[in-house]
Amino acid sequence: MNKEKYTSPDYRPDENTSSEIELLNKQKENLSNLNLKEAQLKNIYLVDALMENCDLSRTNLQNASMFNANLSGSNLFKANLENANLTNANLENCNLLGANLSNTKLKNVHWGEDCKVINEIEADEAYKNGDIKTSKKKYKEAEDIYRTIKISLQSQTLGDDTGTFFRREMTARRKQFNKFSTARIGSKIIEITTGYGEKLSNILFTVIGIILLSMILYGIEGIKYGDPINGDRIIGFFTEDAQKFGILNTIGNLFYFSVVVYSTVGFGEMLPIGPLGKSVMIFEGIMGGLVLAILIIALYKKTMDR
Image 1 (cartoon, one colour):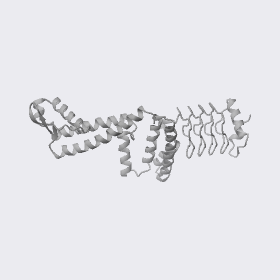
Image 2 (cartoon, helix red, strand yellow):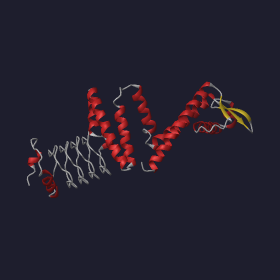
Image 3 (cartoon, rainbow, N blue to C red):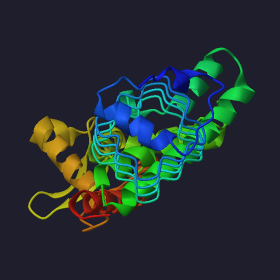
Image 4 (cartoon, rainbow, N blue to C red):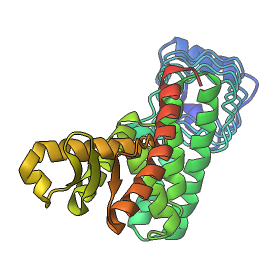
């Protein structure tokens, strides 16, 4: 069967298109660069199909079997993929804007480097070239696509993948803000410190970082310690206490105090003595409650189905 007619820009799908394309795939034909715009391919069997750079915009692929299909670079704009099986498929650089992914099986899909869709890649390129208007439009498209994928993955309890696309969604949203706006800077800080609440490594790094930074600041000004054995002491890096009891004892006490403040336990035997220590204590206590709550949620997501 000649497949050349399907590559013509003027080709218009008909009632035989689905069976003919299915037959070509069974014959192991390369189905790349086909023009199947608005084709009715419901229930089609395209397992292991090689369909790179195809125009599948507004195509009905409802209930299609496309396990391990290579759709890299294809246009799936507003394609109906409801109940389609895309397990192990390659969707790198596909345009999925407006695609219906209701109950679409997306397990082990290859999305490309960092799971970036083509719309965000184009937005990055436009931004580098100084075309801010186009970049914002493309970032908005990418945000919508990431949200659609996230919802589909979430319905299938694919937790790790859901978290990945939630982060990509938030990143695309952030890039729509003006470069030095408060919203963009704040969003970037949240990404670095918590990975938008999805990355345990970032959250743990933030917890340790806040505790150690606060410990250093407490040590600069000093804290009062009601030692039941040696009496009241002023613990700090520049006090006589450090010389008397040793720097390791000082660091250990400061670290202990910082952990107690961060965890909001507050035993009361140690107290800040100046404005710097009091300010740090307020900041650390508030951040401790917030970040620990985010950590608990992140742990729950990692251990339970979403």
